Length: 385
Image (cartoon, rainbow, N blue to C red; front, side):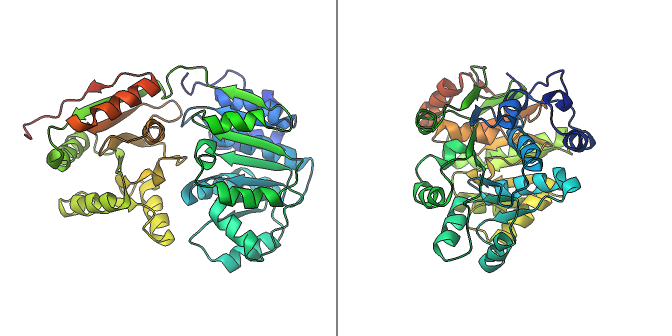
């Protein structure tokens, strides 16, 4: 199922008029499937687990009913939204501020790389909604800051497959102890995992569960191909040729190049700059200010190329990305799904290319099996062997 829109508008979901008006002014007039199916049960107070492809509008599926419910129950610290990356947290924070502007919604952002004392002051000012990464919020809770979350009525776990994967367990345990036992819990993810299934089974009350009906886990508007690279040493040459050819055909296009780690990200970014390809890098080794600048320059379309690690693979909503390039085959299929989900968003088309060496064939076969989609070869012009 692609990100098709239902004929019904947001008004038919019985959202408050001001929310519908805000959506209309933003050019959002009809709900996507995940929004259409999940907003009503969330408004009714039910717990919700939603599994939907990247680029299908999951953020609004929980933000809109959250604002609707808050208007009827004007609590401070009404909702807590947890997400795995700083960039995604900031994006959600910005969306809530824009949509909630008519009611002066107070939102605070709690992420690493920012001044912790100032963040503590923000929480003390009794915000209505807190958007946070687990590591920073857990650290503040254990450091004596005023983090009284007894009145939280709604908890959102965004990118739940990542947050429940195990690496955030310690932080989540600290946070959950501070939350009331009775609350409305919402889990959103692009993929179903055993940990999410376990959360469903152990919920206090059976949640509403909605899963994208499509067998293919990537959107139909996405054209997915591989580029056969005969030896690893030629990988950079193929990448340069792909960028050259693509920019010659579509000079206004934007692209994201995904690399396996921070070191490769920096090497590729610097090499491309030396070859005359202006780009910005995004990885966890960069300071938060540098990361924010990179995202801003890329989102504003001033820079057409973003070289990134999987830090950029989740949640970032940059509609004009036309091309995603995997510099190497991701070792885990779910990483592939999230990477290629940065293009072909909200019904737009897009192209995803994966540079493939003979040693990586088994990885690609595993990805194809998991996404139920067969990649075809993309021919790069010229002889690079």
